[in-house]
Image (cartoon, rainbow, N blue to C red; front, side, top):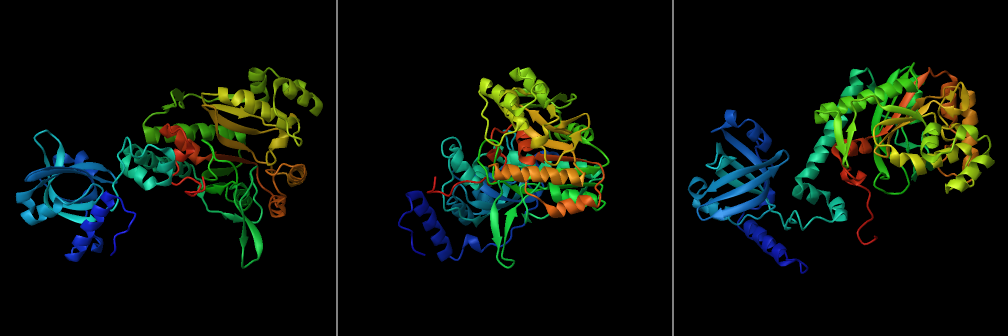
Length: 492
């Protein structure tokens, strides 16, 4: 092996050590297995039962303190860290000399006895130590070497090595996902899988990613929502279904948005948006209690009480409260445009009165909602898959849950009238022609499905990543996605 000319001094030294080992027939990369009998957390949590017990542990060497004939090292495995006491007379002089050449970042295996040091620290006294993998790079120093957010997201593997609190977030994410599944499974919901590649990207208002299937010679879309296939299953006789999977939206990247994200959608026959509100409260409360041990959480300095009943207010009432504009007293598009102009609300050419109400909400209301609040009864024009309110057909039986100025879920009484649904799709097609590239497309197969009859149904959708942000007090969605979407290096 030739030394690479662009290596820094530390890398060159490490590569020379590797070459020396390989020349002596001790290639660390030749190891294929290592018998691990205990993890660091297991030893810490069960020290009284495991004291003086022989164990085999393995992990990354994070610190090393050589003191003549004895040394202390810290090893990190998936569960945490544990100290190892390495003494020359215990492992032998040759093995100890080899051990002294190990570098921070190397992956090692240790056989030894569980004990507690004179200072009271739970440790393992090594009987033998094996270099399993040679690290050829110097690990970044925690507080100075890996602070840059962009570098951390691009090299998540280093972020996880150096910053244990990051690892804790993703361990908690797994627990949250598991708790959501347990909550729904216990209520008789059936978990299913639906296609990611679709011929029509329905169920949401978003720009899709377009791709091409070579064999079929046809354009296809990465799904933007799970909704329409799941509703077909309701038609087929599954009364309670859910899916947790990836969606893809060809839109901007922000603190709250990543083009690839995890969505939970569920549908229940014979209920409505009030039933979905009750389920939402129970799920948020029970998942928080299960994962965190409390339903009172802190997010960005705000104490959020998920144990109390969530507030409920209509979108029009919220706009009246925070913007001083009563949309129930506005009866024409011209009046709505005039109110928007007076209040400095941007109005796009294709906007209807309902779109303008939503724009008012986005500007004046959303940022002011801190405690859990259901915003209900959205305008008809922005709710193409939702039942109308019987006593006020300009509005729909829909709600969104807002907490700390952010939307966490969207739910409604599902529109199951195929004639009305066709009319809504036609309106959406007109909106697309008018310049709204996020409007829904006509889906004839879905219309055919509900023409066979879909029972009254309540539906719910939630961005899982945002829910994880809430329960882990994470500022950015990229803090809870292991590999967020990034520009390639050199194309920033």
